[in-house]
Image 1 (cartoon, one colour):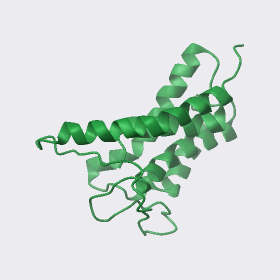
Image 2 (cartoon, rainbow, N blue to C red):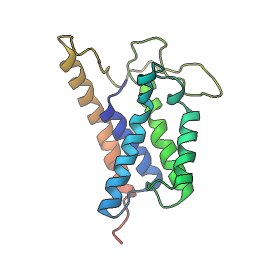
Image 3 (cartoon, rainbow, N blue to C red):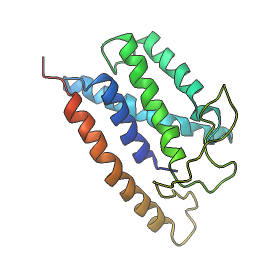
Image 4 (cartoon, rainbow, N blue to C red):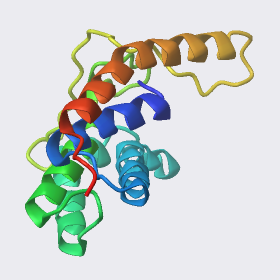
Amino acid sequence: MPSPLGHGLAALAAGWAAAGVHAGTHDRARQVAILVAIGIAPDLDLLINRHSMESHSIGAAALVAGLAAWQRWPVASSRPAIGLAVALAWLSHPLLDALGSDTSAPFGVMAFWPFSGAHVHTGWDVFGPISRRYWLDNFWTINATSIAREVVILAPIAAAAWFFRRRPAA
């Protein structure tokens, strides 16, 4: 499963692809912070021992996107664009997890909740494992290698989304 850095980069790419990049420096910083937080947020389920369950799903993305559009989170200029940007940023998380290494049962993510409780995993392992076992000798090596791989894959995608969707200064 990817690291928070990988999830943040993917959320930026997805959010920017949907909403564009805000022109003002202050607006852009808020947009980046919110999109990155949205991309990382599904992993808060680790705190309640339900990792890769409901929070890694279409249902959770719809709930958060609806809340964001209703409250007009400053990630886009209209409610539909806010909802779409937030939904895509949230959904980037389970997508990356489904494309990553999973070493804990149940394997995969509950991507289609509330329609299905089945776990989905592609088996492709595009992203390397992220270890939480800090006491192991290879902890730093495993994580540094996986994070480097994420940056090589996701940073160009986020940069392309930023480049093609940026808005001219007002």
